[in-house]
Length: 309
Image (tube, rainbow, N blue to C red; front, side, top):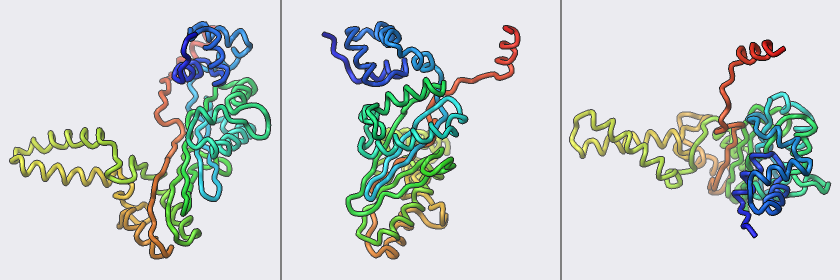
């Protein structure tokens, strides 16, 4: 019996738009043969969603859900912004976000979770919505944060409905300070993250590959000055500090007061809250980021359609 890996299930899911459990069953029935599994899904009446799965889904909504000590984000994609304004789609994304609180950042676990109070899973519900609305849809990703002693603040940018929009941010703050003050400051930080799009919390957590690539570029640039190696090294370190100010959250100028950094803003907030504050993590989802969108020539499409009529 062939071993069915999570990657195989994921690939089939992306290829057909069928539910995760259906994909797993199809691969099991066909001994891991991908093409045969596609045909198996079609034979089982799942072809309606599968026919739409090849179409790029880069629109949709970012959904947010939170409770006293945790928050979760989801990205559910559709083909058009028109669908994002559909009330049924919005209700579905809100319910998926609520389920994401228990999935704790695991997208496969979320896909297999029960949707609302019914028996269908999240993946099955999305598949049904594809058939109902007629557009490809995908549950792309989810993220989760919790704060044992503190708050998880959030912000939705370009909100189309409560806790639904184009950019979503959650940020965890650990502190014994005033919860209300923490929520107020945390929302300010979340808004900053939405605007400034930091790559990491601090310098130490910045991807080393990114740092070394930047260092190499800055070194080559500095060498063009013709200065001695020891001077070049100092030039590179100075320029790296500027780089950190662009991509590291705590080093960035705080958007609410550009004269100070986020780190200094945290220190000031500690005085108001009455206790030390530590930002322990954040997630920022921007709708459709990283998705390859086809370059379409609308005029050519209209001309082609006209020639066929």
